[in-house]
Length: 399
Image (cartoon, rainbow, N blue to C red; front, side, top):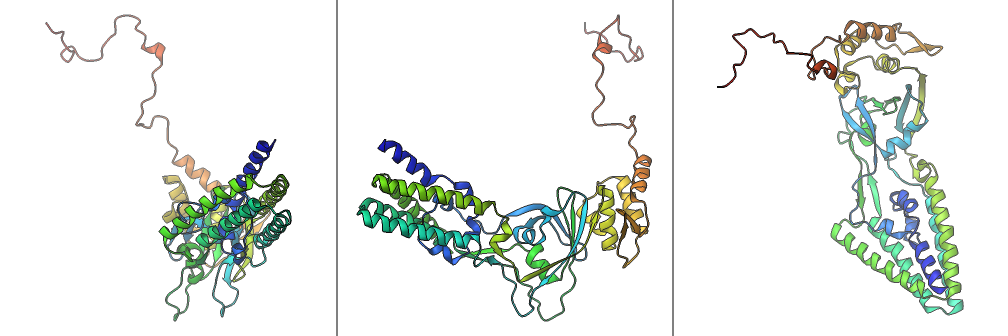
């Protein structure tokens, strides 16, 4: 029975890695992480290397004035823009500005967010276990608590960092417009109006994670030390009194559930992004990709960025369609929709595309790199095969 309890305690001490890893990056931005506490699956924080930047998501980010082009969207703009709320072929316009010109644009974890509250709750449970171990006089439990509580502190020291956004160096001159178009894999689009400073910080230049401990070798040494302390802490925990092991198990079950709930929350709940002011301005719902693309072209006033970013199929029909779209543009005219149909500027983009696809249709008799497969029945000889070659060209048998 005691062996079963030891196995259960060990399993609870290392389970829950997915939930801890989901919020590990954000939790390491908070001061509350320096509190000694129990962590379910602390091995999720003890990696060999540390990432230099935040995670990215697949999307085409195009500066249609500046000509900048990237094929990924960073975590911070994703949290600000919330593209998951857009349906397929929807087009949304937004404006991003600094909330205060006197305040530097910074990004950090929420001061009193769910992760901070979870760290404080874990610390209080840790203190409760220490008091209970002292009351029972269980030295092995106290040693296990000292080791496991130190693991969380060492892991946080090694991963504690700040996020540095790119700086716009030429601050003395007026900032030019640097609006961007974002094309998502699901066929939704966003047009973001911003200046050059915001575009560099959020879309063009990647952010940097600046760690408090900059030496990679020192970080690996700390991670190895924390790993050894974790192993010895689990051994000491397995030799604690049964009542302490039961208390540990209850705390670890509660912490696993709490970490899972916190990890399942929308990620923007964990961040402090108040230095950016995001204002949605327009939103249009279209039914086809060509209609959404025409909406973007009419809003930006040019087709040049479509060709440079190659977000339209590369063939003659679409090239002709883009040329016609350029001819129908009205400079400075905001698209006007009625019943999901653009009435200004007036152009039936779908009918034009159908006409051009028929005009440039690839016929069946067009030569291909791969010849059509011959029917096997046609290959069976029905008699002596006749040759179309003249008698003088036929190969003569060797004697």
